[in-house]
Every structure is written in C-alpha cells, then in structure tokens.
Image (cartoon, rainbow, N blue to C red):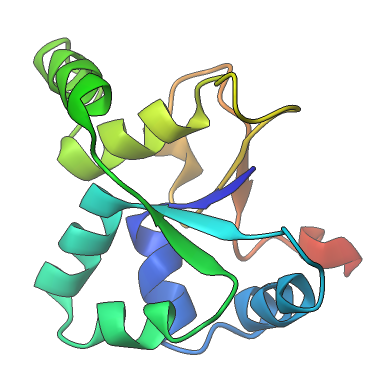
Length: 132
C-alpha cells in the first residue's frame, strides 16, 4: 500500500513531476491506488485551498477514512507524542492490516518526522520511481 502524507498530498496538488507520473502509472493498473489519510487531506486543504479538489480528481487516489478504531488509535498516538493528527493518521495507515498484504510505503517530504521502522520514501529522492 502506498500512502501520501500531508506534504506529499500538497506536492501532488502542486504538480510534483514524479508523483504525477506515479499517479498516472497507477491509473493504468487495475486495483492499484494511492491512499491519502483523511486527516492528511484535511490538513493539506487547511493549508492550501483547492488541494482536495486537485488530488481527488485523480482516479487512482482514494481517501483512507477515520473510522472508530482509527480515531481511537490516532488519538492515542497523538497523546503519546508521535506527532500531530495528520502525522499520526499517516502512521496508523502504515500499520499492518488484514485487508492489505505486503509492506506499506509512506511517501513524504519530511521523513525525519516518522519513527524508525516506518518505511518512508522522500518524494524528492533521486531513486523514486527508479530515476537516478
């Protein structure tokens, strides 16, 4: 599962070249989607009007909602000092889940924000999408 945090969501809306290539490639592969945690989308929209409209226009982008279990877990993470609401919702989405196999990858522009053990990829790293 590929997850976009707040910074990656804003970058996608701003036309980040590599993220736009990724979104386009995923649109051609049935079942492949990029997930944006609802609180990351909320934070991105609060920082820059129109972000939600731009990113949700892509067919390969879906929002990971904040259901009951997620809200309790995210609230606990915030209380325990893992970061703000958007960061903790991204962390929650990156946790293993029964409905997803494999490892989650969290695309971000601030990988130092996340604790060790979370697989993060900097959206501006030269190795993103295999470009060096």
